[in-house]
Amino acid sequence: MWTVPIKPTLSLSPGSHAEFSWWAWHWHPDLYGGLLLLAGLYLLYIGPLRGRLVQSELTRASRWQVVSFMTGVLLMLFALAGPIHELSDNYLFSAHMTQHIMLTLVVLPLLLLGTPGWLLRPLVGPGMVLKLGRFLTLPLVAFALFNGVFALWHFPVFYEGALHGRAFHILEHLIFMATAVIVWWPVLSPLSELPRISYPAQMLYLVLLSLSQTPLFAVVTFSNDVIYSFYEAAPRVWDISPLADQQLGGIIMKVAWLVIFLPAICTVFLRWFYREEKEGRPEFQNTS
Image (tube, rainbow, N blue to C red):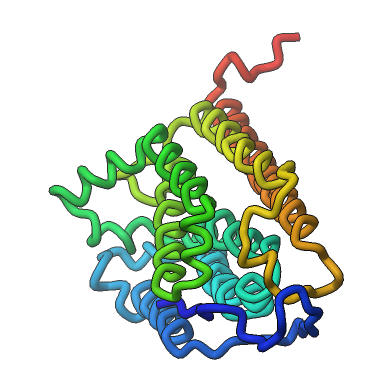
């Protein structure tokens, strides 16, 4: 579905300087067609075809769900066809890190938040799909799967392979997004058949997630050598050296994880607090 350049598209020598435009967009018919199909099916099944999935007229996707889902689709397009895509595939490791963060920690949560449970229920049903879903969305399994995949793809042999091979790069993005759905499921599940974990467990889960990529951050940020030869040989933009670009990529990863997970932890805590307060649980009552 996602097309990417096999190698830097500019015919410049390694280390030379290149001009970059923030208006750079790539035309990939399969990407645009796939996203139009995704958005079109979503709008059809929460609109005119809703009656095929639910009987009650009161069962509707909220306005915020629609906004969340469509924002996720637009951000996916921006990440995979816009200037971030141009920078990541031709010039900067830090842009590639930004692209991966957008896909896994921004786009997929927005899509999940925008998807009503009744829209997914026909895809689950009883049987092996439900059993597999329950296993994959166990917090420990989801945590290990996502972080293991994210770290593994940053080994030079896989990372460089994705940059030099179109099919391999497509596979990388698909696997990142699939595991992102799984890792977010325990806190954002829209299905009662595959429910969210308890609020205290969600908080612990998110705290651990916010810390989980610290080893990768340390390796990327504090290395004295450029890890990926692709970016060492790429044309330079804005006079950023390959090592500084690599260090910036590590910092972007760490800061982005904190910026995303800290508000998520606070949101879970507030939801837990107000639920307990509403139910009159003593642990949240004023004892003075």
